[in-house]
Amino acid sequence: MPPNPAQEHPFKRVANELRAEILRGDLAPGDKIPSENSLKDRFGVTRTTVRKGIALLRSEGLITSEQGRGAFVRERPHVNLRQTGSIYRARRHSGKSNFNAEAEAQGQRPKQAIREVVETSAPERVAVLLGVEPGAPVIARRLLFTADGSPMQLVDCYYDSAMATGTRLAEARLIKGGVNAYIEAPDGPIGRRIVQFIEDLDIRMPYPHEAEQLDIPAGVPVARVFRTAYDSAGDALEVLDSIIPCDRHAFRYVIDV
Image (cartoon, rainbow, N blue to C red; front, side, top):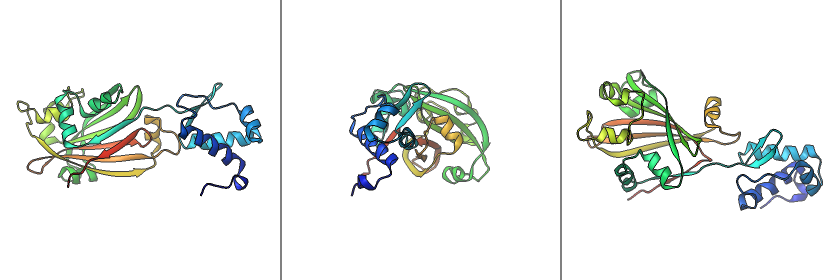
């Protein structure tokens, strides 16, 4: 049952009504929230109460505040990450990386930037998924994915050093068509076909450095997605460890049974 307005704290009444307007679309992304004075008069409360209501909506990631300009309904790009084998192959044949092709198909302007490429020791969970000993040498490619200029994902890509050393996977540059296309290229140094992905998802609140790099407002959780790619022999070729803000993505999985 909806709360009884007579029993609500005044600042929650302010937040609840504005939230409902945002979710209905009466206040669209980019729209300015009415001024504190107008909200004070509308709800018959103090400006302090209005500020507390606005702060609650800000903590939920629904609005942003700009010094000297006021509060606005938060704008954010949204990418629907659809996971099926047919979609993956269609994206691969486009000659673009899977994220870029998926984002472009939804009208976004995607970009990937390399944060670093290093040889490092395999973290325990990555080692288990990759099928190597914890602490074994792996190549890590750390990237930032953006869409329309907004940060969308932090992605750490791991490869067994025995496979990746001496290849473009170990070079600090983007690979045209994406890493999976490079791994599968028949005339390439690896030449192994990917036949299965397995994804493991954890939902949690972001750590401070993640919130800073991905511009995540207070109150918004992240999905940590481990995606492991396997070849026909059942060997793991790649492990992606992605941090994905939950307010910018929709996940859709199609499971044939």
